[in-house]
Length: 238
Ligand SMILES: C[S@@+](CC[C@H](N)C(=O)[O-])C[C@H]1O[C@@H](n2cnc3c(N)ncnc32)[C@H](O)[C@@H]1O
Image 1 (cartoon, rainbow, N blue to C red):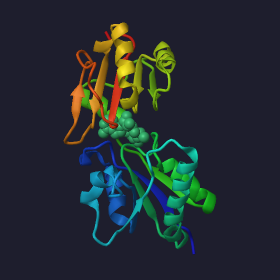
Image 2: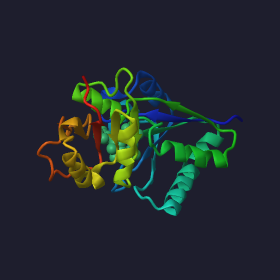
Image 3: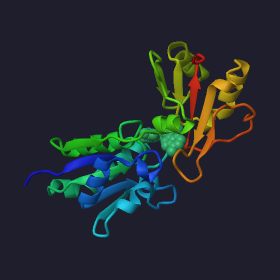
């Protein structure tokens, strides 16, 4: 018997209408569907985005993929996820793993796929691209993310201000993901450079609680949630 395919479906950054037609078609056709769990063990954000496409006869595998940085804990979670997903794949059935945003942009899909490949070396893994949060955020702000000869840098997180300084030295546009924990520090740095009007913050893009801040003027004390990103133009656009 052949193996099933492990699909990564990009659910889009929040608005359910951002799911692609290809993603929706596949969502409806697979029997086995996997989603990361939310913080309290319930189906997480990706599930909430795609729930209207799901069929009652589909089996939902809810995966515990904790938001931690501890590498041994993460490894264990990816291996446990692979353990849950392997049986249907080994029996020739396709499994679709749904992630918020795009599965190719800082997503757990890659790690789960890797853990599965260690178990099932010949496994076919395919990704369906989608609307990632930086592109969704730019669209909501009504401005292209980059244009002409502008260079783009995306920082997955900021560990030191020098990361941001280096990115700004090279790129005209810098996206800072996972900005929440470093926001006060970044705001101060922007204020010192008089760049508050060159930075925008997008919170919960595409969700009902979405908030858009085209500039950071007056937002020193704001506390962004995890689902926030900052777009900085290091040179003024003409
Ligand atoms: C692990 S990354 C996942 C990125 C996702 N795969 C994508 O394509 O957008 C999580 C970070 O993405 C950003 N993010 C994801 N969805 C977002 C949304 N709807 N609004 C604002 N930021 C979002 C936040 O910076 C968050 O901390």
